[in-house]
Image: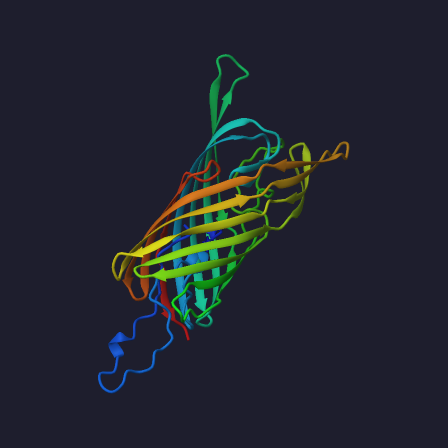
Amino acid sequence: MHEMTKRVIILPSLLTMMVAGSSYAQTSDDQNMEQVGQPPPAQEKQPEIQAIPDIGGVLTPQGRFVLEPEFQYSHSSVNRLTFRGVEILSTLLIGALNAEDVDRDTWTTSLTGRLGVTNRLELELKVPYVYREDTVTTTIAEVEPSFDQSRSLSGDGLGDIEVAAHYQLNRNLDGGPFYVGNLRYKSTTGKSPFEIDRTDDGIERELATGSGFHSIEPSLTILFPSDPAIYFANIGYLFNLKKDVNERIGEFVIGEVDPGDAIRMSFGMAYAINQKSSFTIGYKNDFIGETDTEFTDPDTGIKTTQTAESLNVGSMLLGWSYQIDPDVALSLNLEFGVTEDAPDTTLTLRAPFGFDVF
């Protein structure tokens, strides 16, 4: 469920558009109603609403396994200051600075599996493969006339694998909202920014496919069905665990790095057009705290700490989903950044399909 990716996801995981259309609603019992005698007693059942996997929406029923292939493309154009630094996040650098224009494209293919352990508990595993390409244009102003110099960087490989658990906190027998608790862990299986190939001066020769830091994200999802719409909201806190890097990059040794934690939130509405189609509109925002990095001069042993500024990553969400049959769905989601730190656009295509395993 997240994203977030995810996840809401997030994370993000996202984790990952916060609202997607993979749906595995339980079928109605109306076709099996008795025709004579008094009506049978009302049975407890989940409402027929579509799942919101990235932020822990309607859970997978007990014994059901959902396999979700996903393709995501993200583009951003960033005017940034860099200088022989270490890229911790997509818009966060550590080191001395130069003015550069960066066009960044990221293609991510992932496979997510979700298992309904009970009707109220779901487990999730997400395995991504990442390809990144950056085109960096630097204006050389030290000579007359000035000119632009461009270089391209790329990197591909396994991303950071994520595992998550989602638990429905209430049965919602009174027609009120659903509450779902989520817990997500992101590993460091991707290539870290501290592990990539660099020149002797610390300049990147390739791009990382992972963050380099373990993270844990608890979150709470609220879903309020109001036929034919569902209103949703999610709030979470992302703990990025600090790390003692102890790697020499350029002229300095990078010591302890404490990446900023993040407050993550999203809200919006999913609307059913008919029994098979729905669309979604929403908004999500990540408030990422400051990152502290310890530098050591190997010649003098003097240590200094540099603090990188906080980030505000906000995006509008649009989504469409179509239920091909009871076991297969298709969803297309679009995010477009509305804050300076957010990617310009992110397009996500999912095709989840489910089957019973017990």
